[in-house]
Amino acid sequence: MADLDERIAQELTYLVGHGAPFSDEELAGLEGPLTITCPRSIEGLERCRNLRTLSLFAGDFETLAPLRTMTQLERLQIACSRLTSLDGIGALAALQHLEVNFTLCRDAGPLAGPRPSVGMWLVGNPWDDASWARLSARPGTVLSPEGHWRLTRRLCDEGVALVYGAIEGRRRALIRPGVGLEYMVDLAELDESEVERALAAWQPGGDAELFFDELERPRPVETARPERFWQRLS
Image 1 (tube, rainbow, N blue to C red):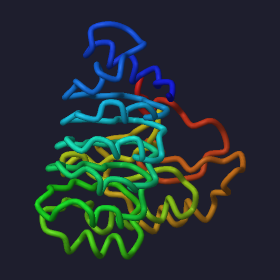
Image 2 (cartoon, one colour):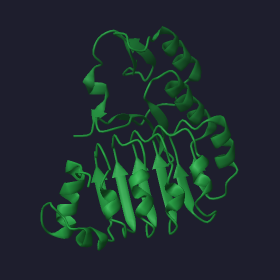
Image 3 (tube, helix red, strand yellow):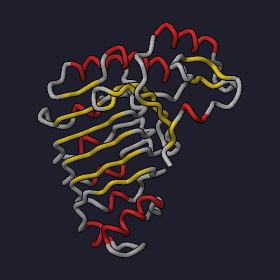
Image 4 (cartoon, one colour):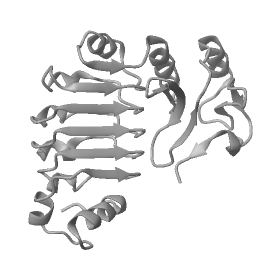
C-alpha cells in the first residue's frame, strides 16, 4: 500500500476525523469535496474510490493513474500542476465537469473518453497540434486564445516550464507550475516576437534563466531572478 503524500494525509485527517493510518472502509466512505494543495504525489488516492469532487492544485504529480478507481467522480479540477499525461481519465464514468488548467499536458487523446456532455476548461496547456484542433472543434470546451496557446507551446518546446493564459478569461498570467508554484498576474499581452528574441538568447541548463522583467518584457537573466516580480505560493 502506497504511503500517502503529507498534504493528502493532512486533508484526509480533516475529513475522516483522525490522523493516519486510515482504513480502506473510512476512505471508501468519503464523497468529498476534497481539495489538495501542493501534493508531490497522488499515490494512495485510489483508496478514495467514491469521491464525487476532487481538486488538485500546484502539484508535482505527472499522471492521473491513481484516479482510475474513482468511478463516482463527478467534478475534477486540476490547476498549476506538472501533469503530463491524462491517461486513465476515460475511466471516470460519472464525470460531469473537468478542468485541466496551466499544466504541462500536450496529448488530449485521453479526453476522447469522457462523454460529449462533459464540460471542459482546458486553459494554459501546451497541447500538440492534433490535440488543439480536436479540442477546438469540441462543443462545451473552453481553451486559451490561439495566440496564448502558441506562446505556451513555444516556451515548453524550448524546455521552459512556463505556461501562459488568462485566469477567469481576463487576467493574463504566466505560471511556473508545480509544488514550487511561481506566477505573475495582470500581465500585458505578451508579444510573440519578444518571446522569440528572449528564447534565442536563452540556453537551457546554463546560468541564465528565461525571465519576464518588471516591464513584462521577456529576457534572459544572468543572475537569480528578482523575487519581487514573482509571487510564490506560500
